[in-house]
Image (cartoon, rainbow, N blue to C red; front, side, top):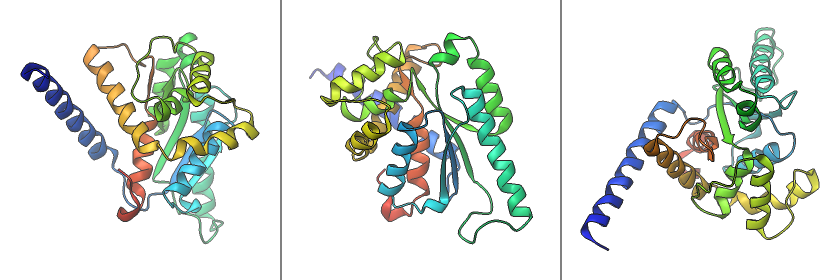
Length: 243
């Protein structure tokens, strides 16, 4: 390896570490935070996050995963905001169970960008999330790109332009059947969970790649699910964290 190449790789590594540290510092996550996670998908994403919760040994009381009421990012965000209000009303009336948190510290919407970008409403989605104080864990073109990073490593392959293409790539990388059918999802999702720390690192490298390239956002392919997963990791007791 030439000295010039070594210098470039070292500089890239330092840049990634700085951005990673900044993201963690800005997240404001505390050990024991209560999460509300609302997902666009009704099967794959809820199954994934329940398995992740178990892997981090986070009590179910602290993480509430609910599929959104419609597969439109705006409805997913609205569902999250409404759930926060309902929870607050129940807390005010003393109707919470003894294991339920008094409030949600972290409110997230897990969404895909493909349809929103295609329909020209992505800016509206981002504005709505900001107004409703809901954090976005979005994937472009879809959640399957996040899954792909578990098994294929860091990639910015240009053929993942649609959700169907991303699903096909996951199926090919797995070497077995993959679909959003519940039975299939429950069978294959455990194959991903053990590799989530690597997926976080790969997703953050993809983010740096697009930042340096000046790619128009949301960059295709990319995912910010890594930010939510880091937050979940940071909410666990220190001895259980994997990052």
